[in-house]
Length: 180
Image (cartoon, rainbow, N blue to C red; front, side):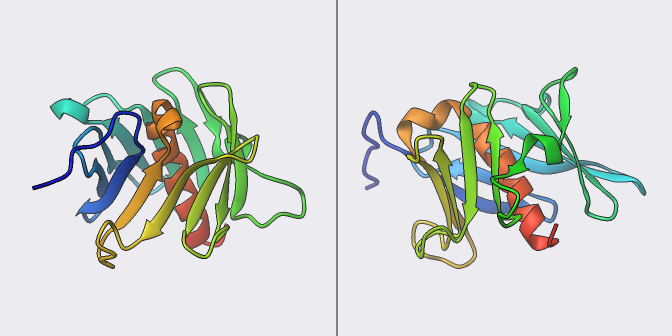
C-alpha cells in the first residue's frame, strides 16, 4: 500500500516521457500533474507548452510557452497571451564569468531563483532562491533510481511556482543539450 503524503511535504514529480516530443511531470502522491509538449513546429521555430493538468484539467490553455529557433537557439518565453520575454533576458547568467549552465530568473512571484548544473554530486540540477535556500532539484533515476525516468523534487513552500520551475528546467536542459 502506498504511503500517504504528509501535509506540507515536498512535491515528488516523476519526469516521464509521454511521447517523442514531451513529458509528464506526475507527483508520486497524485497531488500535481504538469504536461510539457511540443505544440507547434515549422521551419523557423519550435514551440513547447507547459500545462497544469492537475485534477484532470484539460491541456488547452498553457501556463507557459517556450519558443526555440529552428537552429535550437533560445527564443521567447510567453506568460499567457500578452506577455513574453526573450529567454536570454529572462534566464540570465548568474555573473559575467559564470557558466551558461548557471542562470537566474525572476519568477512570477517576484522572487529571484538560480539554477546550477551539477551543483551537488547527488543532483543533475539544483534550484536555489536568493537566500541560498534549496527550492528544487532534479536527478536522473526517478523514485526507484530507474534510469528510464527522472525526478524533480520541489520543496513545499515553493509549490506555487511549480509550473515555472518546470518551464525553466526545460530551458536549462535545452541550453545544456545544445551547448548554448
